[in-house]
Image (cartoon, rainbow, N blue to C red):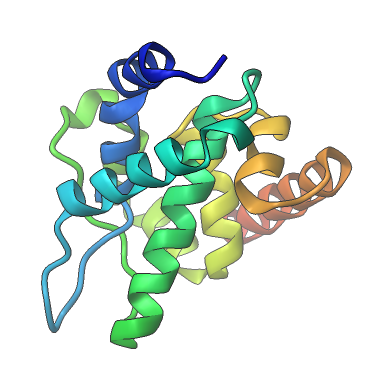
Length: 160
């Protein structure tokens, strides 16, 4: 049952991960987005739609909500999405490791936005194929194919 205790547990378990997910995806040249506000909006949606949250994929579902809220915000502002450095130790964050390597950074920036999103969900957020499917609204088979293609394109760019 998705009651107040369930919501409290979901918030306690996942708020930091959702906040980091959002922080890694925001940076505007014209205005600041407050990751705290977007995170709060995610959990407002969770409370309102708590009956829809799948018990076996809570975090991917949260990432999907965060992704949609960010997309809506960016559409409203007509701004370009860029990755933001997260406030984490570079030795522990794959995003920082990629940014510190010129070859990886070049290849990463040449990838399409969808490929970057897919690979970030796998590498940075630790999602499985099922998690990627949930976040992107795909079937597991579709997510598997998308992951394979994104990896192949990234590999090709690295070898170029």
